[in-house]
Amino acid sequence: MKAFEFNIQGIEPLPVLAARLSSGAEIPAVIVGERGRNRRRGLLPVKGAQAGGVLSEATVGLTKAGRPCLIAGESNPDDGLNAIISLRPMYGFRGGAGWEVICGEAKTLVDGHIAQGIAGRMGGADQAVVVVQPGTTIKVWRTGRLYGDPPEILIHWNGENLLWGTPEEVEAAEIW
Image (tube, rainbow, N blue to C red; front, side, top):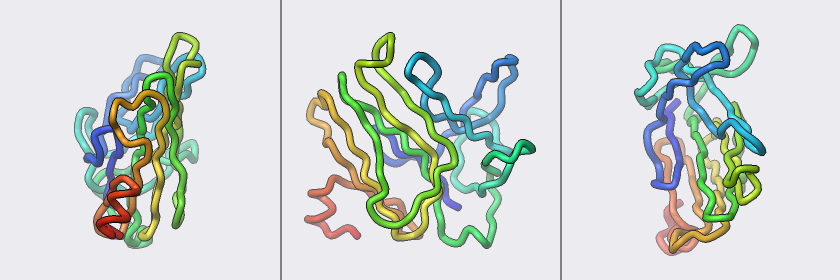
């Protein structure tokens, strides 16, 4: 499956980061959310990759504990034309952010939550890594002070490319 990250800059290759465990050990993983009060960090281990790199293709496997993980560079014929997307929307100042599937199907592999403020009550955003089927459209929304950035973005996986734009751009250009 192709792998992507959606963040405030748009669509990028999926980064593999060094996740420090409580024991002090580090593992390569895709990280969503963060640790702390009113926050939740989600880790998706990546087998066969180095921290600091990016994933362009991966398949979903299971850890020894039975939780999802990614296996770098492998493809599975059962995956079809599905894609892996890390949804990392950022909130506006003192605002929120989240995402929802408006067409198609998405399976959540791991989720997390980021927040603003010491107690995490100034704002926050839900983040996740999902597997989507061709034809899936996801709406990412943002609130708070956005300083000119759009409050909504639509992301669409057509089985070959990950397309995105504001609802107005998608409607005007008939992107999908």
